[in-house]
Image 1 (cartoon, rainbow, N blue to C red):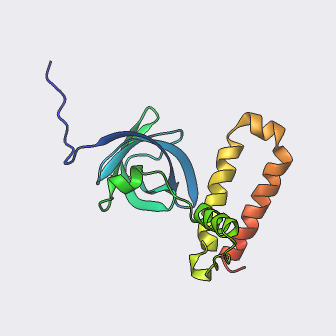
Image 2: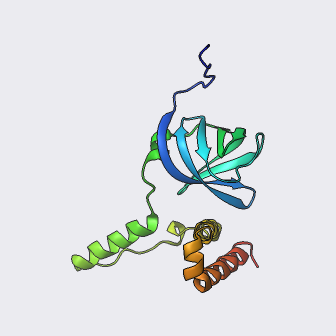
Image 3: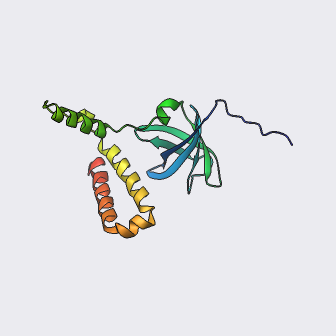
Length: 169
């Protein structure tokens, strides 16, 4: 029996990262199982077919990709450009948490609170994308849907309102 040939041009890091795969305006929750500067192996449900254009999103990071193959709940995706693997495997930082930490540090030291500059705030499009992903994750949990159904509906309504604001309506 002959060994399977690996046609990858770069070594891959074995990882277990949460991410989202965007197909148009629709997001799928995926786990990144291995990653290189030019591609990744992801697993999840309802993955797009080979040849589909997509975007892999992890926190504030995003890269365009094409599905190279898809089978049995896994897909190999090829990035259209190179990514920085170290940056992608690092824990995503949240600018909001950094601001909270700075504000509490200033309060403890009796200093003036840091000023929030409008350009530091996330865009409505980014907020919309994050809310959509949160809604999708929460709605996919039967236990949460039963226990917090009304709150999920309200959260989804707020996400739609942000969506309308982001679109200028």
